[in-house]
Length: 325
Ligand SMILES: NC(=O)c1ccc[n+]([C@@H]2O[C@H](COP(=O)([O-])OP(=O)(O)OC[C@H]3O[C@@H](n4cnc5c(N)ncnc54)[C@H](O)[C@@H]3O)[C@@H](O)[C@H]2O)c1
Image (cartoon, rainbow, N blue to C red):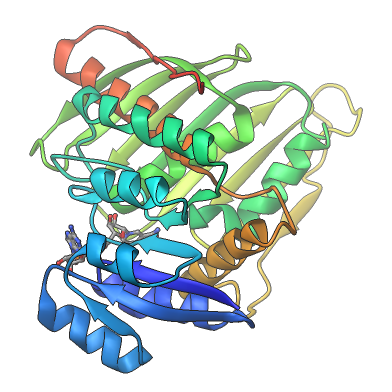
């Protein structure tokens, strides 16, 4: 039996993480913790789990395999470090940190993450982050198509997203196209959730743009232009269009493939949480090494913070990547 403890009993833990863990055979949630006793008690009673208001007490008195740190980003870093130091497998939400919230990631949020990834490396446990957009079928199909070489060499990636998916789409761009070396950004509006537009230079030489805005409903779109074809991926559990030259020169190539998701129970907003958690548990069980990790979480922070820095200073910013020890 895999024994899970949850830290932070807010809406995400209650509505998405706990059902996600409980849907996996052989997994039980044995403890919950929240500094707000009423919230801890409510979730603990619902799950028949032990209730704590302090993470040290939980770690010291319950035998746990996985700790799910499902608080908001502000209090998250010290909790991650404690759980890793206690030799636990740790699953958490994105972003890894954010003193000013998830829509205003700053360079100053990052150094506190170095001892966390160092501890993870030292312990050798699994450290997963819920980049659940990676579980969306349209996104997975795009990734597989790019990796197969069918779209050729990347040239330009044009991305836009509603603010709520900013962290996810930055991770998605890096997942499908590799590291980002430099960004140049501008922003407008309220600094807690600014509209932001950035140019990006990727390590593989391709270029890109990235826009996030609070306007309009939850959406995202990535337009991938490669030397052999083009792909447009849209929205969580949404569409993917592939236009592949397949060796045809000039302008005569045809639209070759439209793709719509099949309505399955796993391809829903909630379903992606469950799939992401299930993949992490498979990693803990040694059944896969494919999962979004703490390093992916750190890389997202480095890119996001570089955009903020560039927008604030008005100059291009190199993305500083911390090397794992
Ligand atoms: N992956 C996704 O698609 C997705 C979607 C929505 C939200 N999120 C992320 O989920 C996270 C949590 O969201 P939420 O809406 O549930 O947050 P929330 O702030 O409403 O709830 C977090 C809970 O953590 C508790 N808490 C804070 N500090 C604590 C500590 N030191 N020890 C124990 N408990 C503590 C709070 O009392 C609160 O009950 C956010 O970081 C958000 O970015 C992810």
